[in-house]
Length: 270
DNA sequence: CATATGTCCTGAGAGC
DNA sequence: TGCTCTCAGGACATAT
Image (cartoon, rainbow, N blue to C red; front, top):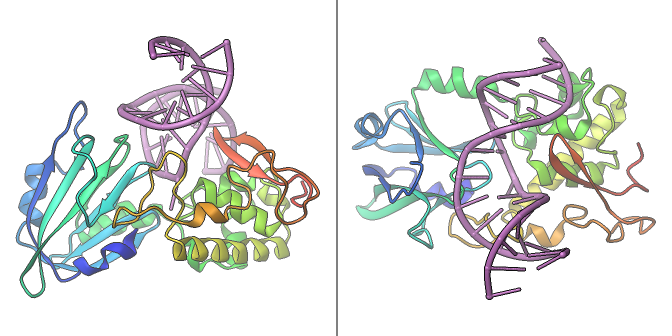
């Protein structure tokens, strides 16, 4: 999603506003009046990503952090309906072109934060592990190797490794041929290496395909276009279908930590 | 301390 | 059709 908004780098924020809210207002910290005083008139010098969050770095050192969780979107186009929680930044791009950046959230689970440079380091970055796209087997093993948790659950721990979501954890474990219920402490050095390689492979491919738009249609890219990676899922949402790799069993669905996991009982050994 | 679970919210789809 | 139930790219507070 961040790739779709790189062009707002260099833009000056003219105005921040929260539009149409029905029941619960969109959570913005600090409250909107103070938020506005700190961002209006400021220039965005860089767009960034911190795990699953989208970050606008301001010239002042402040950081606007969008935390979409499952249901929020950061958009360069007008949200498709006027309902739901919405937030908008009016921008002037380099060259004097007027533009907008929107945040739109159908279930209202997401949040927007404004951090000072220091608070960004201490209150956000300090809570996130190394980015999943960069991990090595050694890093994974160092951070999770002594945990008793199921490896699938551990992969979702953003403090351990930042950036892996529920469906990607399932896809990664299938590529690495590791059972989701395997305890971290029981993985071999070699399996950590395979897990790291699978993580990089799955996530970079998913980014290339602009993510996964599931049947509820929630996820879209910054131009409000559906992703394509859902067509390449190996196991996620495939319960009962034959394993695309071994064809020796059908994909099974289990629940771990309250969340669905899919795996092949034949080629992901416990 | 580490790990497990409930909760926030809306809407789509399945099943009766 | 109309109802109820379940579940959804997450993260965090609270309990054990």
